[in-house]
Image 1 (tube, one colour):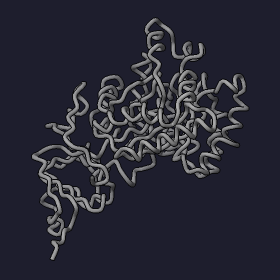
Image 2 (image 1 turned 135 degrees about the vertical axis):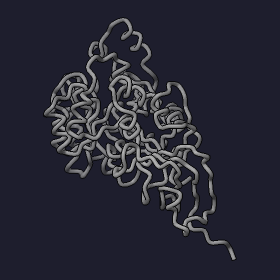
Image 3 (image 1 turned 90 degrees about the horizontal axis):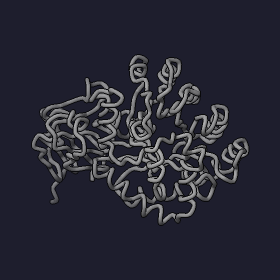
Image 4 (image 1 turned 60 degrees about the horizontal axis):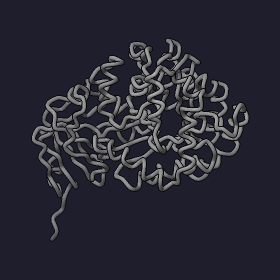
Length: 407
């Protein structure tokens, strides 16, 4: 008779950073075990509490004191893009501002031109190495935005490419429609007309095709007004889609309050958010996503109001904002270090920011982000002596193993 196994895999002798919300800090368990069955965690806790019925596993993996965290989550990326904007980087070094580059025809519009010229296959070919780099640092879930197509066929192409990447690699991909990212050249001077096209044609078509998990927009003086974004969000709500918002990055247009009014999953950037905006985010349960890569790369001076977010109890996530123009970064470990050094986030906040709170920012808090029974078995196993090393080190990847859905 074939042996009967209680679980598929069992990790023993590990130190766990569970990130469970009922535990203190990162939810550390010094001598822990994780049991997995059918791609789900069935036990995560002290090894002494492991039920006898779960000790008979198909495979038992001794961890020799290594730390296990939830698989990392990059909750804000523009990973699918074509080409690069290294020339704009040189312009910025010579003193050009973000706005000056955008108004001179650079910025997002230059990425639109490159993406429209690329095929879906070419987009996948160029973007997979970026995903591979993130996977190599323990990322198991990633959000990928569109927003460089700015018309129906090219936004569709971007979202299809993102979906293919999730099928070609062992990672969970969430697709976000960012049609309200910039004004496409064919709508020059006509923001009202473009917003109308988004809400009446582009967004409904992509939603019908099942290509969208959430809807985002860029609320800024060089992009779209709060009133224009409200129209997009109303259309998203009518389609049953959650929303997110690039808010208060370069100025305070009260984007955080707008995001909160629509119950957004997240509001991202937030350098210029005020006390009222932070309070609104807290009331709405909206996650504030910190993007230190963009802050660093465009040499911003005003950091997000971390103290305000703490005071109001706003959950804070951290992401790479990987994009070709303002954050060409494919390291979530580096993003954590930047969030600590530039924004003064604590180690515990940074680690929670790329696990539990990043899951919340994607509406996936019930599925991933913590080591708890019932969650997907997405794990990152690290060669470290203490969790602070994940935030402290620069240019160092201590990943020992990565597990996605138990595999």
